[in-house]
Image (cartoon, one colour):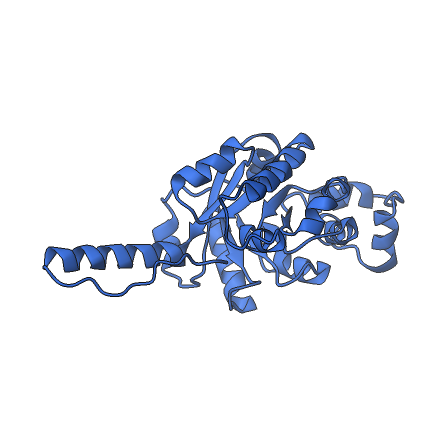
Length: 270
């Protein structure tokens, strides 16, 4: 899938499925190529990855037909531009709460390489001069802008946020959202589910994609799709490793008649 195809699916179809890739190992792409993924998610907000690693990951996965979506450290337009320069197909901007933040990110992702006063004039509604009016959309055709909705103020401001042009999808950060609601990690609470459905519904009504990074079981993730999500980031490589090694070692110990070890059962929150 190309980034343009992913963009079309987010606006007009889906669902599309990805996973969070924590490991920068060059062996990982060989393993992931035939796993049925539509895209990969790379998180620099919570994961310690340097710029060189991110660029290699982005360019490798993009060449494989897995558009890389990179979450930046902050909702900075400068960081967004840097991620795109490093090969990201799309930027995921964390903890958005105001429409003005999205406007600045729109400039960084959809109007590159404009900067300074020319960019500010364009964001204020002034038409681009000369051939620039045709050049900018083509130059940025492959870029996706995805915004994290993960707080009560973001939900309260959601309609204004979604009125900003050129958003390709919203993405719920469930851990942060549950904490902002005063319901930390209570993902089955009716108030949390009602809030997520509201976000999905409002985004899809605008023709904007609606996603969530979920690490529950398959049934809980299918529930989000039934509620209106058309993008699922399914767990993470580190979660699959943890669950796999824990479950298989427990099975091996049981097969050998050994006492089970004390293993952690908590989920990995990212």
